[in-house]
Length: 367
Ligand SMILES: C[S@@+](CC[C@H](N)C(=O)[O-])C[C@H]1O[C@@H](n2cnc3c(N)ncnc32)[C@H](O)[C@@H]1O
Image (cartoon, rainbow, N blue to C red):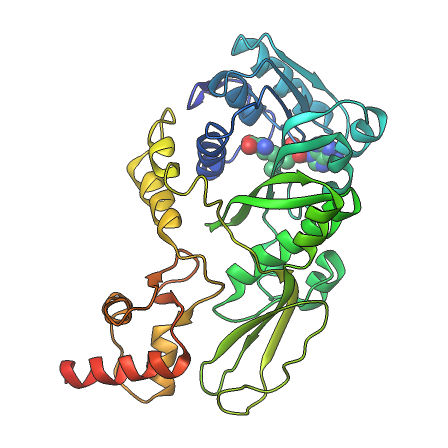
């Protein structure tokens, strides 16, 4: 086997490797390059080691520690570290949990959890080897759970009710971030979300820790609920430990409720202007990836989005382009833009009544 990605060449393929996760690795490098002071990293679920090897080489790390629980995957990891001539990486055939409980005095500037399925079982332990300002990156591939196809599994794993509709992907990321914010608060850390997105089969979040009980409380106060009215299309959010909204404030119908979840930002305002350029500078990053990251950086910091086809269907009108609607709302002074989470949807600060008025006016000009 010979798989080349960025600065790494994987020759020993006895461990799992997924070329579709290249964007996750590239984007993490693009983000980490914008963070000063990342000198060491823990690649906690290494498999072939492609992530840790790339981080070592492309972030110029002084040191990396790479863990792999499976014995034959560990042989692949060792062999790939050697063949890539990475001198500053140590690897261990052990579990994340065992390592973090054995080495609580070791502290890492960057920690990456990229497991099969949910990151939930690992996040408490990795906080033991984090420090203030650590960057913690984690992947979830249990997207069906986070997006509401298995509600009880989401309640069990993340202690949160998912959305099983077009809002599912954003709700899923927010549920995962809310879960992490609650754990981090136990260690007196707040969270500052650097970058988070949903892509193909996975969700990815990169978060910076912020030290102190005040920061922890500030983050936990950003947890809350999301609401969706299927009758009129209204959506809303509410921060706080309790839900006080049971009927749609627009039409009075019953609403779908999801949460608790993170209702803070999904991308750091500090990295937003520089992210696309940083992605373009990652070795081997391609046009499609750069465009994707550029689109993330342009998404407004507004929770959730409206499905334009669903709204026009509710209104018994022919479908219109989401780009045309976003342009019309922007022209009338609103923030409005498409989202990467779902096709034909827009994020906007306009109310449901204002959106519907814009749809009617566009339909008239089109007809
Ligand atoms: C999805 S793969 C990792 C892929 C890799 N990070 C990449 O970017 O190509 C997950 C790996 O985590 C390992 N693993 C599972 N549970 C673990 C644990 N508790 N501690 C350490 N490694 C674990 C699995 O054996 C598997 O090789």
